[in-house]
Each structure stands twice: as C-alpha cells, then as structure tokens.
Length: 389
Image (cartoon, rainbow, N blue to C red; front, side, top):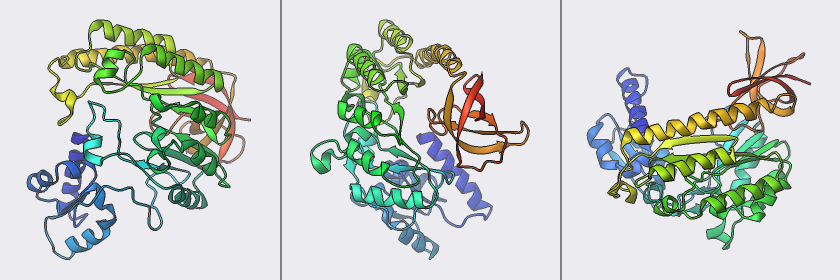
C-alpha cells in the first residue's frame, strides 16, 4: 500500500510538471505516518493533511493556491460526519458508505491502529442521512465498510448496533442491495447472522477475513479462535442462511509459520470450500510487532505458499461456478460490450472489483444500473454467461 501510494503521488508530480495540475495535497495513511518525509523527499508536494484534519482540506487548498508553501495540518482523530454533497468516485449505481473509522483489534501485522487510531463509530443519524442522499442521487447498492463492521456501535451504545443499522438502511425507498464487508469472525454473533438471514435487501454475501486457522498463528497475530471454532461458525452461517456466499482473506508465511501449520491451513481451505478467497503472502509492515518477530519466513516460501492456496481455491471455485449453471440470479447491469453484443454486470454474489462478473444477452435495451434476472447457461473461468429472462 505504501509503494502504491508513493507511485500515485509521483504520477501527480508528472502531471504537475506538465502543467495539468497546479498543486498537490496529500492525505490519508501515508500522509499521517510519513508527513515530514513526504514533504522533504517529494518537494513537488505542496501540503500534507492528516487523517484528523480532513475537514480542513478546502482551506488548505485555498492557502497553497494563494502561495503558502509546505503546509502541514494534523488534528484529533475523530469520525467526522459528512458535510455537504458527496462526490462519487464509483459508478452512479453503487457507493461505499463508511460506518466507522480506525481499528481496535491491534493485529500484530497491521499498522492501521497506530495510524488511524482506535475504532470510532459514526452516529446512525449521520450514516442514514448520507445513505438517503446517495439513494436519492441514483445509488441502488450500498456497500457498508469499516475496518471492522462487527464492532459498529460498541463505543456509542455499549453493544454492536450493526443489525439495527442494517434494518434502518433497508427502509430506504429505491435501495436494492446492501452489501457488508469486513466482518470480524470473533464478533460475528447470532444477532448479526440473523440480520442477514431476515433482511431481503441485505445480500447473503459475508466477507469474513479469517487470515489463518491455526490457533498458534492466530494467537501470534493477536487474533482469537481456532480451526474448530471457525469451522463451527461457518457451519452455523450456512445452516441459517442457505446459499450464502462466503468470502475470506488469508495470510501465508506469517512469522513462525511451519510446514505443518501451513498444511493445516491448506486442509482447512479444501474442507470449507469458500466461495471467494484472496490470499496474500505476509508483508513485513514497518512499525508493527510482527515485523520484529525473529522467526521471519523466507520471502520465496511465503509467496510459494500463497500460490499453492490460490491454486487450490481455483479448483474449488471452478466447481462451484459450474454449479451455477441452470440457476437464475439477480444482476445489476454495468455496461454493454459491442464486440460481443452483450451486456455485463454482477450478480448479488459478487462485490465490485474483487469478484467475478456475468455477461448476458437481452431482447430489449438495458441501462447501466438496471437490475435484471439472468438465467446462467455457461461459465468462463471466474465469470458467468447467461440471458435475461
């Protein structure tokens, strides 16, 4: 993420040199963590704005455009309400809505708590106000995000308020889908599971990053649980929500991971058969406890283990995808491909950018953001092929 952020800044530097843009203001995690280095190492940057000072961005932009140089502003980390109309960077029919900021899980491999602070929930009122405005502007799918959505409301009400929030969001007229990401397995309660099972607008798609299944590795990550507990949780979810789509992420090569512990993870993946899975080789994050662990796994071993997991998952996904042939699925139209003379989009089973797509034909004209029922008759690796019925 650090490398990607720096590359994006350097892209902006080139645009500044070409005269396309006048000033560069950097904000976000990189700015918060490396404020002095950003200004000293990339002199083309005019200002750095900390995470707690997002509301000052307009004022900072006015100052740098007025000639002030090397501005830095860093305020208290809060969860600020959205003031004014939000500008979408996504297509008009879906939007991400953040319900909290920061993280209190303190996983040993992650720097987010030290950068963004402890978890702070937005008020339900501010979330609903933003959601209603988004839907009024044409948004039909809301994607609920936070570093840990299952922690929502604990700091405000002393208990998880995610189920109540989902109920309130589902009452918004014109909203088709509510998708929730980043459900922490330890806090995935019966109440949250029931909120998915009993709410027609909440798609039965659960993103549960488990990272590993071995209890010793999880403990070193400062996460809790075990293979047995994770297996029981997943069985309960599948029983309560038939047909649920489960997505997870895994880390291979975490410090101290033995061949036996990796084999356990591999067996777990084959046993559970997740519908969607992303796997990342452990990356040594500066300033985190895990970066200082003495038993670092060789980089090539980390990568190879990740490749093995993804090869396993591809075979699982291929079988699961073929099982969709003959089924009818609700889809959102995302565009038209003139080369194949067909439309493309996503089923309710797929989140944007990270999951698969579906291509389909239709006997009448469709528009981007329309919702249609598509019968699946073929598959193409990660994607589905069908026709509107």
